[in-house]
Image (tube, rainbow, N blue to C red; front, side, top):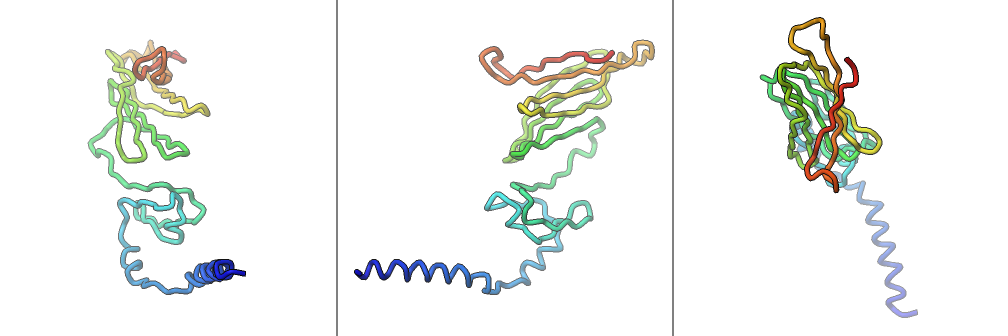
Length: 188
């Protein structure tokens, strides 16, 4: 047996022993404890899972949450929305971490995409002329198609009542050169 054949098993055994012994090394915890009490504004993960923060405490709105290792968190971010916003807001987050939201003010309905890198894209769904809206709800179906439902009122006339509209987003393809909304009144 040559020296190469004898050295390879010894090297593999040494790497194995170092890997087993590495959890026994104590790292300074005083630095971690001082940072634990402060509220985190943004946390990035290196491995793409909650294992990086397993056992740590995240403070959200004054409530402490312990991060479980099996939680599949890719990215966590805390932001305050515009406090002067007086409309309706609804949001859904996909499995891959993209957030879709709809917002309304009295005369417009908007669609927003919040990408994983934090960028925000906004798209006008409908500008209401002579009509008002109070709320919206957003959903993503199993084919990742976005739908927004919202209510419509024809001014203050109680006789006409309210309507419910459904807007479905058509993505760019051979037919549409830009994102387009298909809007239908589904209840009158």
